[in-house]
Length: 538
Image (cartoon, rainbow, N blue to C red; front, top):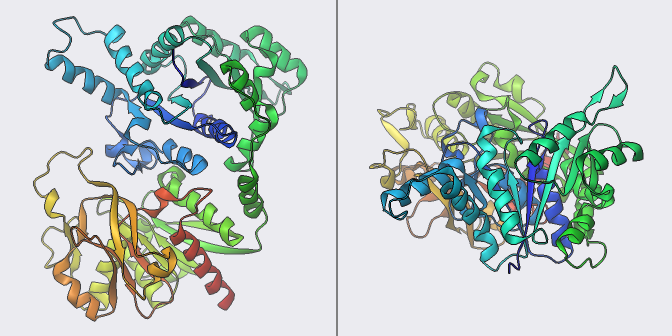
């Protein structure tokens, strides 16, 4: 008999309803009651992982400690729970089929005809239960991507049906997130789309246990009764999820609606009273009641889609609350930034962050933004490509190497101050082949980062192919661009700083991936503090 409980979160009527936020909020409430909880995401697309997807297509690619390139929802899971995720927390159709085909090629199916049922569904069920069988968790919440009725999601829905039958209803729970649209002409909320969505789910053999209803207006008792009756759920299992001013309000809203209580009841788990959300609510209070305001420029190539920089934007929320400061992030498209307009575009900023990215487009704009921040003593953080742009800018404008560049942008540059990593030179496949996951970094004394981290050794997550070229390190150091973080095994430069600047830091890694509500990332906290100091001095 299974000791781990499984919760499945499906979506109906419309995409982008916030399954990830509901899953993370429920997990937070269960965790606050003392249960060990993790969340995984099943994505129905055929890509093996999001690593090769354009940020415009799928938002940011989130990276875990063990080097998995995953869906951005895993960022929500970590930010809410403060528990690291891993390769096992994100499964795609591509990965499922890849694994089954590899098994078939090895002869593991003993000549059987390989089919969606049972071979694909067995693989899905196995992946769902990996985390549960580890013994590390009491509850595994599985978010199923897409919308019920999508052809791509059918094998996942069938796998859930089988698991409910195999493990029993007392060990499995299905939460269906749906939309209750408001028709302004009629002046009322309509339940019919939800009824059809639940019916579609039932046609696949699954009865929803809980309905979470996304809505712009409060659900009346009459409407709740109607939903319960026609969707075949208990009335206390009809949960209102009204629009919130911030995603960080959602756990409290779900607590008020009793989502955690009904979940525990249906799974036969002990209800020990209200969860302890003291520290969470302190964060929300600080976030909503700032004592000052700062404006930080986000210089990027994908600023039209906010999800492209989701973890960075959330990190500013965490760091702002830690400083009791409201951070206004002003997105500036680097492709349209140049020497003629950089001063006007960046006027009024209290700090600047040059974002990560790939490819040549918008590079010169990022370099101009770095130059402006350096020359005007504006607090600066460069992340990954942003750090590399800082090295190129310094090489060109301080060291005098006018054509300095990265070999990613110009293979024939005479001064390749950023170059392809040695280990990458024989790699031809793009997916999952970068320098990924957590790597160690040793910090030097008398540096900003040593003061920020308050330690001498850190582990941060990476996602890159190109690196600081150590052949130019002595020249750059002599000119004032100090190396303050080094990987102890490879001697790779991880962090650079400028001596005569109040706060100028470039990091090769991605600090935004490790910022959570409980532990705001110290680099972001320090950058916001530096922005406040700059703002007050203006």
